[in-house]
Length: 123
Image (cartoon, rainbow, N blue to C red; front, side):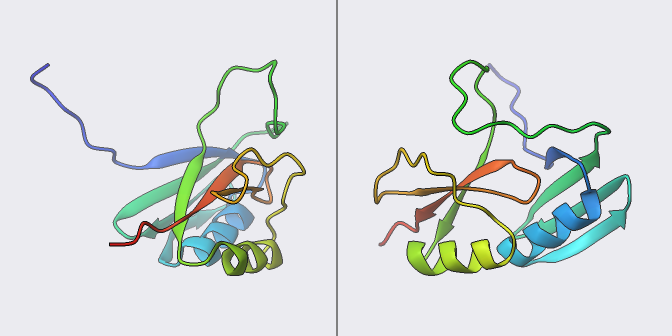
């Protein structure tokens, strides 16, 4: 293959784009670069994450062995326990099912989208 692509941004379906962007801005830092009821965006570390309004939005369930694999975000953090506590205080939830043991933690954002926090590689 001679043509490659660069990721321009990641977009997630959302029941409330403004609130969704506010949560992710707290988690990722950066800034909210667009905010309207139908679409909002956070830009952090050179990556943009957008949130588009979907009427009748239903979050994925975790885990859901009957559905096809969905995309989710993996985030590096310096301390799993501290990050988990702060992200839950910001509005995330921690599902009971945790397949990573102590290697990573699965959380869901306020719209029910799962994401993982992972220890930042050392060295």
